[in-house]
Length: 89
Image 1 (cartoon, helix red, strand yellow):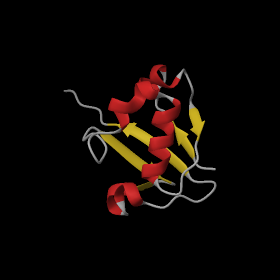
Image 2 (tube, one colour):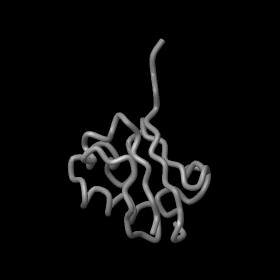
Image 3 (cartoon, one colour):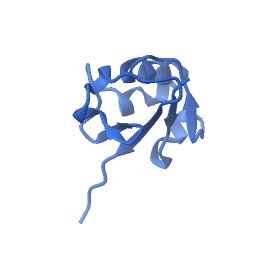
C-alpha cells in the first residue's frame, strides 16, 4: 500500500497525520484517496486535473513531472512525498 508523507504545513488538514496509507495504482488514485480520507486537503493537493503549481510531488525520490505526472505508477510500498514550494526573500 503506498504511503503519502504529509509535510508539517499540511498536517492540520490531515488530522495531524505525518503519513497516510492509501490505496492507488497511480499518483492520481493515491491523491484521490487522500482527499477522500481528508477532504480539507482537496484544494491543497489538487487543482483542476493536476496539482497546484506550488506543490511538488515525488515518488520514491523522483519528481513526478519527470516521469508520468499524475499517471506515475505506484508500487505497493511506494513513498509519495508532498513538498510545497517555499518562497521568500
